Image (cartoon, rainbow, N blue to C red; front, side, top):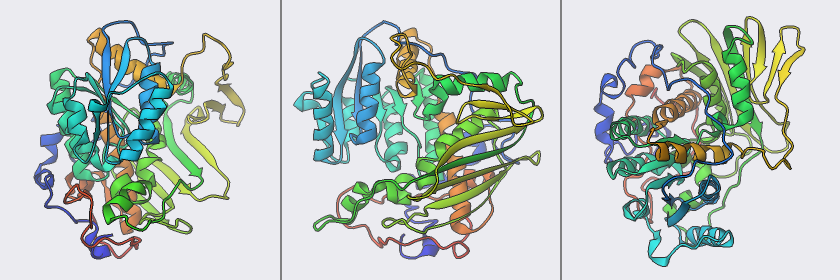
Length: 449
């Protein structure tokens, strides 16, 4: 994507984050060295509580950074989480995105004052510095590490969409800022929403209680259609084109493995009690994606220290069969954590989640709202929740698989934690990007990360 394929692993190392590449692993996460950090827990493994709404308490004001479809959805989910909640500030790099979000909120009865609408690359700082208690980070993930850093520096609580970064230096930056947030007693809730769905929690509880015995292997799939894309329009600079088409570029989205398949990778990791693999062995390619610099199919085998293997495969090609599954195979049976079913070894169903009647007035809100209920409850009870490390680890797992596929090399967890790869822009401003090309990575031609 930069001047040549051989350079894509190391471009823009001289940005403001370059120094992070020299930080040793123990300085970031004690014990996360050696063979895949086998004993480092991602978080206390337990199921989140499910509620009809957040508890009552002091009014809370949130600012939204990133006013696209996901950001607008997150703002509405926050407002639906309980009483005494407001969105009071909006920020985006594009005026039209902010205007559309503002209109969507207005249609639901929520007016945002002109003086609290910020457009430009510094919008996160302006939103954070406004009179808000919480910042919702929903920009393309290339901006997430710096934005999260600033939010924590200013002592604000945070909802952070997935993934938390597009490169290892960004992941390490989030790990460091996450520890600072914990020291300040700030709440950080992650957008890895499957952990917040009632159906996923009920399935998890049964597997955690031994329904399938000891987990021996996993097979995880997310085979779906192509996402949206934008063709370049006359007058768009390199920066405007890449940001308006951000889901199709590695540097802005992290690749579809990192931006979307992180959900299933995170779900699998939850069931594995946070165990991290020692190595990723992957392959992939591109058949039909029409813009950007990304593959559209990748298959990864994660290898764990005890010899266990998890095969994870994803595809974004329309017109093909689709499946979303997270199969976990144990000594006593197996489970599909994505479809919320548990099977006996003979293939008969031992248990499956009974879908509720959506018309039931006592039916709890879905997982997207539950994330914000947990956020609000944590703040109002004074019991901080911090999911930064969980999100960072799942993000790095997905990046690890991406890099193995794009380089054609086996990539270890230790390599990822030590990597100085930095995909972010040298300057956050509209205009040309030096060396910009829509170049497709060729496995076997790039050096190891």
